[in-house]
Image (cartoon, rainbow, N blue to C red):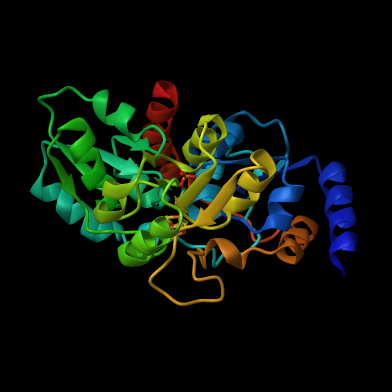
Length: 310
Ligand code: 13P
Ligand code: SF4
């Protein structure tokens, strides 16, 4: 089926089945274009919590679709490709995480939403990159904290909040791939540019950034800022929304250490979803996210705490 036919079929099926398509900014262009809503992790969780659709097609990665299912036990939640993982979520094993918790039994556990339901179930409160500072600030100052699974976001939060967090040793394969040397070379070509970065990036990238924020934070900053040229250190899919929102500004993807076709950072997990797979999952109502009631109930508590505070 060609792209036009796929789009027509997806439109027909979503109407017939009362389905909503939620997509993250890192999805391929065609998926962002067809989605009912495109957003960052926090916005997508909020959308998932309030939708009245019968089926949620989550064009993102597994932990995002799983969060939508935790919030909507009675709805069918579909993920176009079950291989859409995340290095942060996949690198945090629940048994090992329990061992870390056992070493610090008096600590409050804050987890970044990029983790599995089993890790959420072991947490006191969840956060995303857009509300992490606020969530940490909501915890009494004398209360010690474990933060997992992203050590780069964790280090950034230690600096920003002056709290002493115990960190899990995890990272995002995409955001740790930015090259500082190449970034400096690029900046020298565009000396008036502003560097904007996602807080999953390493410390040396964040140190040179003019603005640090979530994917939506970055988009809003560039929309409102008077500048004209920006170097963006996050996954390259965000450039699609920026090309729509600020067509007159020059947006350049920050260079990655790896040499690939675009020399920029692509999340291989996000990009396993395609328009064709989105159509097939809507047609077959498969792959579907399933989660036991016991796990769902435990994982919901820290997500609820986050949504109440956000
Ligand atoms: P945002 O919450 O900023 O959308 O981040 C999600 C993510 O996976 C970043 O790598
Ligand atoms: Fe996970 Fe990084 Fe991909 Fe985001 S960009 S989904 S954190 S691997």
